[in-house]
Amino acid sequence: MTEDQIHHNRMYISLAEHALGIESYYFSYDYDLTHTLQRLDNTSPDFVSMCLAERADARFVWNQHLLKDFHRDDLSKFSLPLMLGFVVIKQVVIKNHCFSYALISRRSCHRAGTRYYMRGLDVDGNSANYVETEQLIECEGYRASFVQTRGSIPLVWSQRPNLKYKPTPQISQSQNHSNAFQKHFATQLFSYGKQVLINLIDHKGAEKELENSFRQLTNSSKNPDIRYEAFDFHQECSKMRWHRLSILLDRLEEERKMFKFFAHDKDGRTVIVQDGVFRTNCIDCLDRTNVVQSLLARRTLQDQLVKFNILQEGERVEDQLAFETVFKNVWADNADACAKQYAGTGALKTDFTRTGKRTKMGLMKDGVNSAIRYVKNNFYDGFRQDAVDLILGNHQVDEGECATTICPLQEKRDIKFYILPAIFCVAFSMLLVSFLVGSDHSGEHALYLAFWIMATAVTGGLIYYYGTEFVDKPKLVQTKNKLD
Image (cartoon, rainbow, N blue to C red; front, side, top):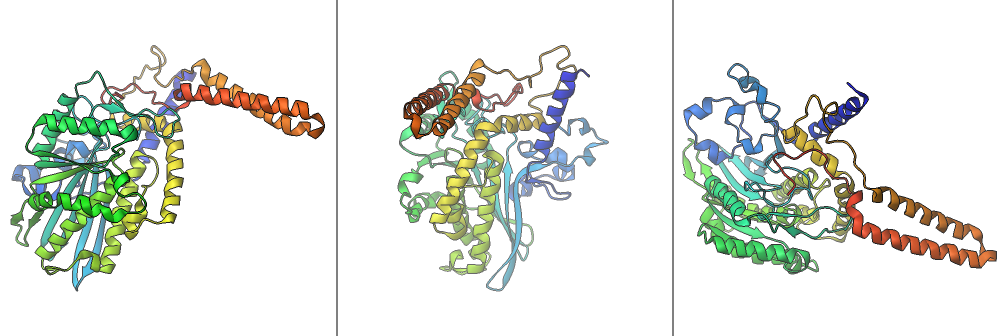
């Protein structure tokens, strides 16, 4: 190999190592983690006899590309599907009833990637940050599950990092939003039944246009199996008024009762089927989304425990203090796992999920996580996006790369990338000189200080207009998950 090929080969290896080192990959030798309990209950003997890799839900198999050479009769039985997301199983006791409580979140490998580089839908209707979350309980042979989904706002939109704290979302003017929307929900309705779309984004500022477009597109679809429910989370719950989430839950209660949950008895007979799901989103589908999903899950868990005679009518899950602690921490851990995979840090607002209260300490922790997200999303996410695309097969390396073709990893820097740091360094040097000059040279001190102020202002202005030059952008060619 040439020197360039050796260099780029090392970069590819580092990308692969990073992708394989992502936390929260899960597998099982005997249980199909990629399917919900309800889907597994509605299968044929032929399906059950298939190996795990063949019967797994392709949406949630993250090593599908890596296993492609094993898709043969003599090798497929050695293939083990990997799921990315979150899995926890707890043994808990309520009123002398011992049972298993589990939570499984399955992250889709379609339109996968990082927070700002993967937003909205692609032309095939795949949603960014799409996660299927299933809450399960098993007690004395009875099993029950409750499924919810989350996914980016189902429009074709983007929000590219540009060094601003919150880049302005851009709704595509060239793509057909209706087609992508219809494709997305055709799959959702087939897989889950009726849909309630819970939109938690702001109704003002940069998010307002997304809310209006989402509402209009849902209404124009005229699909009786889809209902839109908007709730301005930040406005309604401002000034620590988180009790106002009950307003949203009350609006959803009729559908929650109608959708029910899945359950079968100790003889394996299905006694209840879940007929629909809540699809929840905020701008990132992380923090606000997880809070609302946990509250819906608790209300359904209450119904499940009453169904299994663990609780009596009128008794509340919240009053079972030992279990309530487990429940809150499981959902907070789920929030952290999903947030790390998409945004690079733990979730925000987990103090409410863990304790049921919004605290000043929680606000301070959120501030730290927000600052870390800013740095990672602007200066590290290009590398993380490339790592995901490489492991999923969205970019496939050409063996002759760099020898006969241009390597996609080749750095191409605009001249502004070099000029701006130079201006900043000169400005900073002038600042140091102004302090070293001393009071005897007040004229020179003022001159140097004025130069520093002017140069800093010029640098700030240029960064404002050319900020994207400093952002770490993906370099690999997108073939499937195009960065629309």
